Length: 215
Image 1 (tube, one colour):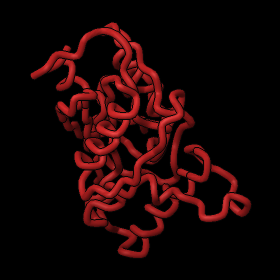
Image 2: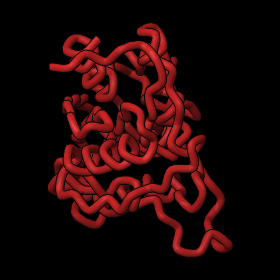
Image 3: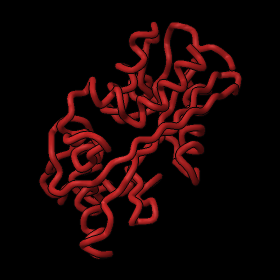
Image 4: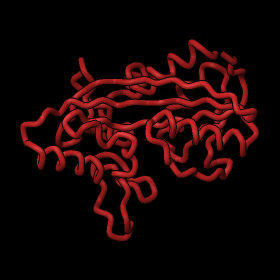
């Protein structure tokens, strides 16, 4: 595998929460993260059928346009009783069609026209419609793609298992964190100290594999 050398690395994401989390994970290794938003890079259409495919297309585009190595993350919440949904559509479940009529945000956050308070409510309501007693087992998946401008890419995947809670708890984290309680813990990702979340999360699992292989 090609090694990732210290220096600038494009984080191919416009999600500020994700960029901050990735920067914290890479900081100790001499990497200088710069976000796609800072470079005014466009967001590609996520037309892949898996987390890995979507991460790959984002990283390839960013590396090509920036002329720098680029790292993309595609991640999401997979609910067992919903046959793995929202899965690769996790961010799209949070889309507000008309931001002028968006509901007030609950736990979670609004990112542009994405309201993750609304997305968490949708997951909860879908489970209730299916069966109020349906299993709340779920897992987060994170796929990482690291690409260089010459087209070389490496891929890594991580996972963390847990249970969904309602109502959501905690103001930390982002996305669906406030409704996800990882196995073996009493706090949701939304309540957890960031350092503890970074130690056990799906993203941390994928990054451990990347660091071991490339750094």
